[in-house]
Length: 197
Figure 1 (cartoon, helix red, strand yellow):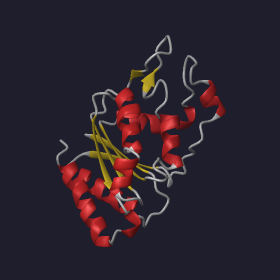
Figure 2 (tube, one colour; figure 1 turned 120 degrees about the vertical axis):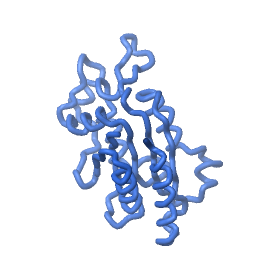
Figure 3 (cartoon, one colour; figure 1 turned 30 degrees about the vertical axis):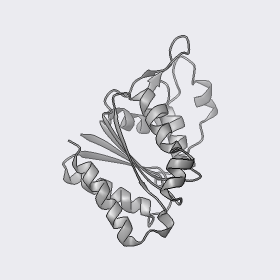
Figure 4 (cartoon, helix red, strand yellow; figure 1 turned 180 degrees about the horizontal axis):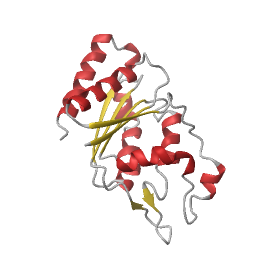
């Protein structure tokens, strides 16, 4: 499969980058074609531009500044997102990638009456989100009802790639995790990806 790995953490020595290396290693060993979108390394600008916003409901979205990112997304058969959960949400750079790249004419089309949007990511069959959180599991699941998972599953994939199979792996209390615990979590990532075919 053509797999797009999107990484959204500014520190190369972070747990997220260790997890991303495990993702790339597992996918490569399985024989998949891997493209890496490291948003910080590429200095991706998360802010939707005035031109992009003006064209959002126009005849054609102005995707000139994100054409290469859009092409990678459109060609992907599987996607892995690796990011920290900050304030129970996405890092700004990843949210901006969704805002600017998962745009009309790319990830979906507007309905003529501005009703429900029409999905365009028909090739995307598998998605895995890998994230780290500072909080314990029960805060994310029982208090906040997994807001990041709900946005990914329902708002993004549910509307833009409804046939996509979605999974999420969360490393809780990440700041307190030992290297051995991070390695164990990376092994879990590799077991999940080993099932992709």
